[in-house]
Amino acid sequence: MTEIALDVSGFVSALKVMAERDLRIAATWALNDTAKEASDHIRDRMTVVFDRPTTFTENAFYVKKARVDDLTAAVMERPTRASRDYLKVEEAGGPRRPTGFEGQMQRALAYDGLISAVIPADEARLDAYGNWSVGERNQVMSALKIQRDYAANATARSTLSGRKRKRSTYFVPQSGLYPGIYRKDASGNIGIVAILTDKVPRYAPRLGFHAEAMAVFEARLQGHLSRTLSQVFYKRLG
Image 1 (cartoon, rainbow, N blue to C red):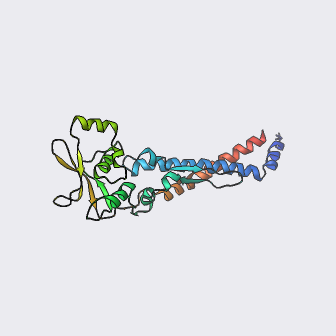
Image 2: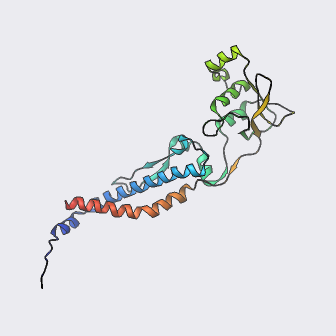
């Protein structure tokens, strides 16, 4: 019978030197790769469950990487987003807090009714993401004098335009019209740009951050760990 002798000494040596640090290195790589995939998945999901999410929203999360001495990787909300609760409401559902603009309206507008929310209406000027444009909101704040320095919102261009022609004006009627913010253009046409409501907006859960991230973790971590263990092993094998 023909015998084949295999030299496995290199294999055995590699096993011996695969100490705990090697295992932790492999685990670190696997955790970070899995967390990156979870973060990318959540970003992709936003384009499905949200209508034209802004870049600010799409970049709401980042990966806090694991280290050899700390085998914890996390997908976390950036501090600049965490100070706002809109993503938390989209995750858990329920009422949302007033925006900064709504808070200023509540505090400073001469209005007899209760303002819980300001909702853009049909005549509102929208930006590329379908949100009420910052430019028109600034014009509203200037016209209604609800900022300490409301005149500062008028740009040099709009001021120059006002010298050449009569600009649109904004007002909030106390009676006779539906509660809201109205725009009156140079021709005297009136349109509602925002609705003032005493009802607090409520949202149903939509984002699914925790469930979706956990699904990626369960589906991908084992495969990544098998790959990174092999990488570390063959690196030792030389």
